[in-house]
Amino acid sequence: MTEPYPPQILRGDPEALYGKPNAPGNGPLILNQNSSARVGDSVLRNSEGYWENGPVSIDNLATIIGNLRQSGNEARPARSNVSSISVFADGALAATGVGCFVPVEAAPGDVFTRVSVQVGATAGATMTHQFAALYAGTGAEPVLIEQSTDTTSAAIVEKKRAGWNLTKPVTITEAMAPHGFVYAEIAITASTIPSVATYGTPAGINYQWETNTPLFFSFTAGSALAGTAAAKIESPAAKVVAPVIILS
Image (spheres, one colour):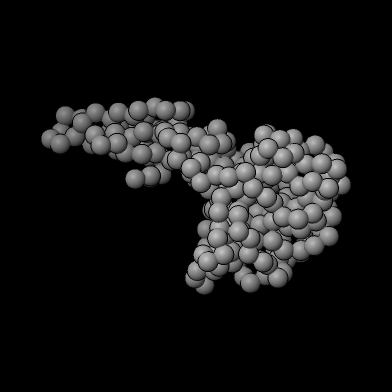
């Protein structure tokens, strides 16, 4: 079971976590340290009841993205729309000039400065515009929170992480993510759009499941966007693969 990192461990307070070591039924505090402990880390409690902090397995997001933190709030881990490497494929973003969107977990107090993707075997070619953006995770036409600078023809090379810095850090508020997510967008205008790490979102299940859930798990919107994000998401269309997008 994954649980929030126990603050008692970070405070070095075993009695607060497990009680006095010599009391009946209480044992010493033992942490199987897999990486440096930070508030916000994911941890697992093993069969002996001891805490193991992430990264602990290939299914842990921290393992996949190298324990990347939020640049504006390093006490918290980076966020993404995926947590298991077993589902990855080398897939497509959107067509040239079209926005590609996914919902990404977010909580009030998260501070995001960069939006990234993991590029696959196809590099970008003849880019003229490229940007990333964040939209509020609410409403039928989610509104723009912030976008990155248009990095125009900057290289997007194969098999590397590519990213775009937001024009200013975004501190997530309850109004931006009332249901635990925001939408992240990547839009590239180029003769060849780079491929990226993706996972499947088949048409049969890619729809809004409940009132407060994402509109889609992956979708496209807009056209001829060039370097400017739309003020709101309009007429989204479901997409059968979702790019893995990382907010840090």
